[in-house]
Length: 358
Ligand SMILES: *Cc1c(COP(=O)(O)O)cnc(C)c1O
Image (cartoon, rainbow, N blue to C red):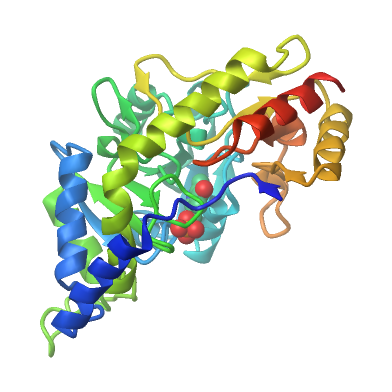
C-alpha cells in the first residue's frame, strides 16, 4: 500500500538510547531533561532570533491556548482552507469563526478581503500557512496594527520553512506547529508554540501547565498541554535526520515537477522569498470529476493520495453557513500525492503515469 505519507522512523537503537536516558533519570514528564534538550536544539535548528518556543503535547492545544489568551470569546477572522483543527479550536474556545476566502493560487487567506470582515467584535486573525506556503504576512500585520488585532498563525505544516531569511515561526503574535507523526518533523504526537513577547510566552507557559506557579500556587487558569519525555525522545532521534529528510522529499518533488503533465493539472504557487520544506504535493484538477477519476485509478493500484483539504471549513456543520467560492472550488479539486522518505522511484513513476493518462 502506498499512503499519502509515512512517518520517518529513525534507527530504533537511536530512539532507544534517548529512551534509556529517560529511564536513567526515572523522569517521564513535567519538562524533564529530554524536553528541555529538544527545545534547545529546536531553537538552534530553527535559528530563532526574536521568538522563543515551548513544546506541547500536540499542535492543537497551542491554538487553543493562543485563542484563550488572545481571542477573548470574540470573532476570529480565519481561513476556510486548512485542516479542521484550525476552525475547531476557534469554536472550542467559544470564539466565532469569520471565514475570509482564499487566494486562488497561493491557497492562503486572501489578505485583500480581510478588512471587510472586521467588526467591533473582532479580536484576532488566525490564518494558516497552508502546505508550508506563507500567508502575506506583511499585509496581515499592517491590517492587524491598524485595527488593534492580534495575529495567530497555524504553522502546523511549516517545520523548516523560512520567509525573507527568517523562520516563518517568527511572524505573528503567536505561531504554532504540529509534530504529529504525519508531519515533516515529528514526536509521534507533539507540537510547539512560538511567541516574541516574553510576557505572553509566560502566560502560555502557565496555561499549558494547569496555571501552576510552583507546587502550591496558581498563576491563573490553565490546562494540560505538556509533552512527555517519551515523545521528546522521538524528536531528539528524528531531528538529526532533517537534512536527509528534506533532501529525499526535494527529490520526489522534482520528479513530480518534471514528469507530471501540467496541461491537465496545476500546481500551487509558493510565495516569493520562501525557503519551502516540501511538506506536501498538492495538485489541482480542472474539476472534481477529474480528481475522482484519478483517485479511483490510483486506489485500484493500492495508492492512496488524500483530499487535503476537503471539505472547505466554512461548510462544517457547527459553523454559521457562509459562501467562500474560491475555497469551495479548490477543496473540490485538490489532491495531495504520496510524498515521504522511502517512496520508491518506481512508485513515483507509476503515480505520474496514472495521473497523466487519465
Ligand atoms: C496537523 C494540523 C493541526 C493539528 O495538529 P495536531 O498535532 O494533530 O494536534 C492543526 N492545523 C493544521 C493545519 C494541521 O495540519
